[in-house]
Image (cartoon, rainbow, N blue to C red; front, side, top):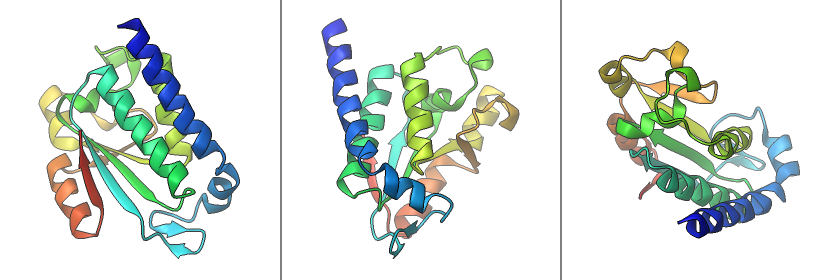
Length: 162
């Protein structure tokens, strides 16, 4: 079990190293907004469904996002759509019963710095009685995770479910 966890961490870190190679591109693209790569609108768009609270599952999705960033040299719009039990990834520690590792929290921050958007489903938030003030700064509240998946696919985002 510990070996699997370490392997996942090494794989993820390898992905971040690849994404880190594009750091100059990320800095140059920062502030251009979603849909705008270095050469104009990004033609590469992906939305991940994150609907579980299991740390290994979350690490796999974060690793995949890092690999996609590296592969497309940061010319990609990535949304990680968190709903259901997946919402806990975006809840501040003091309200979060999952207590994710510092490693996972750092990966979220790092990916967010590269422009990855982390959607937080307001419908799930209502169900578990948390407000916007309970979310980490990287979270972007959206009306519904399911509705957001549909809307983004209609805008040309590739849909990846784990």
